[in-house]
Length: 294
Image (tube, rainbow, N blue to C red; front, side, top):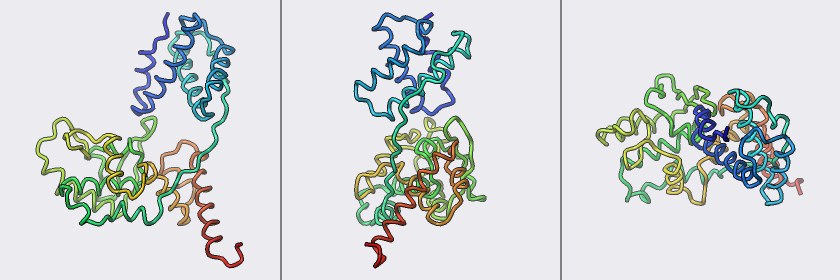
């Protein structure tokens, strides 16, 4: 029996493309390391060998977060081998990895958000109106609904319920959730779907995709990055708009568990990072404005 990487890759069909690729790459790196030491199948691997591999990664100066991610991929791989009857026991069970340090996301300033969502139209004169309509809708949904880039790219026409003011998205692990959309996002989306997308003609390759690129195929993450780069006054990752969405909800008094549901987080701990961001913003505002702060 070999390492069955192709079968493992097929087992990840419920994950996003980026997640599946990361898992396969991480396990492939482990397999390459194992083969260099003469091991040719999972049955030759025990927990001690896996611990040595994580230690090896540390000597190669991988970040703690990266090692923790690789350990997660390894556990997923061996769990699949046991579940499919290819191994009698799981050597990765309780495999520990250094916990990654939580990184606080950078939230775009009000001026940056204004530049993105309400740009100087004169500065965009060289851009075709149809693509301006698309970009407006993309940016409004990223910030107004807090969507992941993969969720936005995966939107189909049937996922938009304008009468209810919601969009239905498929998050991590193929989990479905319905997200409310504000008036600016719905207006921008309606403009794209009535005045922009229909003017592009036949979109066979895009299928039912809400958003398409200039090759008339479903919009991809790189396309979204280019849209943000075009509008942003400073380098801004598309995910920063999701950070802003969550932080501004908490600043406005939204319940943490409600924000968890809106973001599609499986764990409340993932959402709690935004409480730290929100608190930091309050402290910074206090120190700037209050005469007794310093």
